[in-house]
Image (cartoon, rainbow, N blue to C red):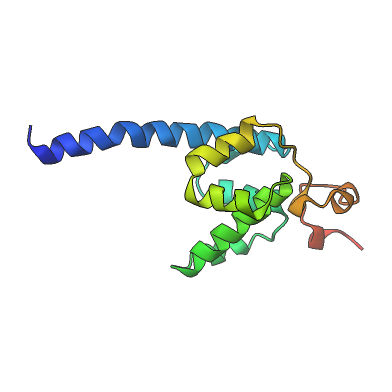
Length: 138
């Protein structure tokens, strides 16, 4: 076995462990927000559901696909996710920089889903949470 193969093998185990931790954490976060846990593991659809959790329209998903610009939208959605669970901007920095620590804290800690942006009054008047606020009939 050459050194390259050994290095790859040594890196795969921690990467897989971190991946499993993040999947389990997202599963629990989606359940706390009132969605099915399996929705956290379906590619692309999980981002669509995340946008519903934070109260943003579906077309943000398209913006997240733009190179470099998408990174800003992802960080912004993480900020809204932390606000939706009553956390601060400091927690958002943790979600971005150390997701394998802060996502489990959000999932298994005492954080409760307060609605999009953490606005309880708006969430209580929101009604059907399977729709976005701008889709409500007037």
